[in-house]
Each structure stands twice: as C-alpha cells, then as structure tokens.
Image (cartoon, rainbow, N blue to C red; front, side, top):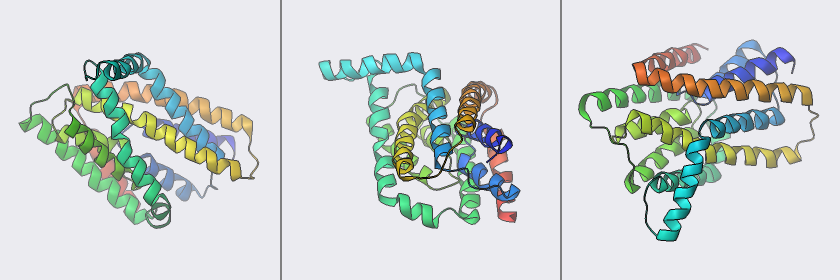
Length: 264
C-alpha cells in the first residue's frame, strides 16, 4: 500500500463514517474499481481508532455531563438530567453487540457482495428519506428519550451489520421515525457510535495480535491523522447542513451510489 492509497482510504473513512451514506459501500467500491490490494488489518484498526478519537473530542463536553448524570442516577436511583441519554448509549449498544457476536462470521462470508451492498445502500437511503419526510409533515419533535426509544433505536442499529446500511443512517432513521427531534436524533446516533466503534476496534485489535503481516508505521500515522481531521470536520459540516436543508442530498447520493454498485 502506497501513500496515495493511504490518504485516499483515510479520507473516505473520515468522510463516510459519520455521514448516512455507508462507509462500507465506499470502501468496497473504490479498491475494487482501482484494483488496489487489501489495506490490511492494522490499517483498519488505526482508521477506526481515529474516528473514535474524533467523535469523543467533538462531544467531550457532553460526555462529561453524561458521565456525571449516569453516576448520579445510580446514586439517587432516578433518571434525571442527562442520565437517560447516558443509559440510552449503554443499553442501546446491547442489540448490535449481541448480533455482532452471533452473526459476525456469517455476515462476513455471505453479505459482502456487490448486490447486497447496493440493495442496502438504496433501500436504507430511501427509508431515511421517508423517515425525514414523515417527521417533517406529521410528527411533533421531542427532545428527550424514553426506554422504548432506546430499545427501538438499539434494535435498528443492529441492522448496520449488513454492509451498505450505514450505522449513523439507520440510527437516525429510527430516531426520526419515533419522533425525536433532528438535533437529538443526530446526537444520539453519534454518541451511540462511540461504544460500537470502540468494540469494533477492540475486536480488530485482537485479530491483529494473530496477524503476522509487516506494517509501515509511517503510513499508519498518516492514515490516522488524515482520518482524525476529516472525521471531525465532517461531523461539524453534517450537523450544520442537516439543520439547514435536511437529509435529501444524502438520500439522492445513496440512490446514485447503489445504482453504480448494481452496474458494477
């Protein structure tokens, strides 16, 4: 892997990890299209760790208050302030964690075809568009979450194991469908990514221990820095854009991307 491939894949990871456009679809299509070799497990671990650092840094203030609210809820045995959202992050991760442990190998073997990625990219893109339209036309937004919200969004997040779905996309879709405000939907979806990315990075790190391939540390460092910077500014850009014009540009993009995958 050379520096051009390193920077390109790092940019793709940084741009697509938090946008509702499916990072897996992009990481499938480009290397295949350009006939690039596999980037290796170490590179995957580093890029995932970079996106984790970016989202933690962006929500650093919220994470402090969430942590305080979580411990206060244990001490007082009441959910108040930020404590419900804190519990939502913890409990909402359980469904995808269980599904990942049960079906990870089966998904890797059977669901990484162009057809599956293309279908998931288009279908869940249209579902995102429908949820946003329904939310704007008929639903009253609310800025708090309940226990049933956590269960629904958590179960929807498990669908992100299907390549092409987009983890942020499917969790935002679920949050909009149950009536959460756009602001809370995006915040909850992004905060939910922290334990998921952390678990994925940890699992890949365990696999990396068994990997005997040599790594180029300079390329890993470049990939980390590019992904970290790109991820952070993508989060800022995405939140501001959605507040102004909604999700329609991402829905259209996903339909076009899915069509391209079907052609390939």
